[in-house]
Amino acid sequence: MTKTVRLLAATAAAGLALSACSVPEVPELAGAKTVKIGGGPASLVTVDVNGDSIVDVVTGDFLSNTVSALLGDGKGGYAAPIQSVVGMNPSDIGYGDFNGDGKVDVAVTNFFDGKISVVYGDGKGSFTDRKIFGGGEDPARILAADLNGDNITDLTSLNYKGSDISVLFGDGKGMFAEPVKTPVPATPIRILAADVNEDDVTDLVLGHFGSHDVSILYGTGKGAFRAPELLTTADDPAGLLVTDLDDDDHVDLVVANYGSNDVSVFRGKGGGSFAEARRYPVNGGSPAGVVAADFNGDGLLDLATNNSATDDLSILRGDGTGRFSEGETFNAGDDPRGGIAAVDADGNGSADLVAVNHNSSDLSILLNQASGGKPRKNAAVK
Image (cartoon, rainbow, N blue to C red):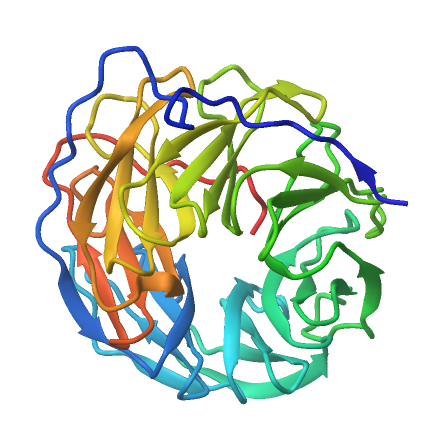
């Protein structure tokens, strides 16, 4: 049976725990620039696909059945998309060098087909030679990470209707084994990989839509997982982040709650144990994802969310102890549910934001005007 760990959110009179310390400066972000991409984009990754040491953006375009590679110029701009066909309704995208040729490849979940498509990069932004692998029932998300410790990237699909995950072990030559399924709690909508209990073994963290729960599946080191343990967060946990927010050498967990318009911060105590959650309003509607970076140049980690219902992004300023301000909002495009990422797009040493807008089918680029403050890599493997 599923073991349940109930960590009730700490609340103030208004239902949210707010930092009592001084609030850091508001970030300075320029107005959003946009670049058109494929139809109905639902996901993004940021990675250097053409080997010029500049981070590019690749999106999964749900309605046009493509991935779009937008090559960065290192000055805050992105070229027109290079589109590659990946099969019906790509709902999520992951990347890695799947065939060992030193070039970035991508994998997507084909939502209604129940399949995973892998296409191989040419090192210039195009992806070809599509291969199809088994997924699950309505695979909503994909994870590209080494789950069995052989230093070869594996694929995991998160199957929304099937309420399970499918693990496909990679051979390092571009092929993947038949899926091995593991049941998970109902309606999983988000997945990431991280060493949650600090035992040098990859674990999985899942968000479950229509619930108040996040589940943690602790890994065995062989690609299998123990029964899920649940953390109670808030309404419709849709975005996940694992990183060390307070520099205490323990990973913390952040959850963007789509239904309650806030984020829950679980400070890690080590060994997979977490303190009670503190919740902070994003002041936007339906946050679908969350990232961490220093956006105001004070050397401390902040949080940012992409808010689907209000067409904006929120930045919550951190004080370095794992506490945050309420969200400060910045305009994006029409329904930025497709994803958010923190990158230094213009090479000035500051963390910028990019977001994928599902309804307007474009990428919003918000350049940071502050000095200092680079993006912090997620402790997650994805």
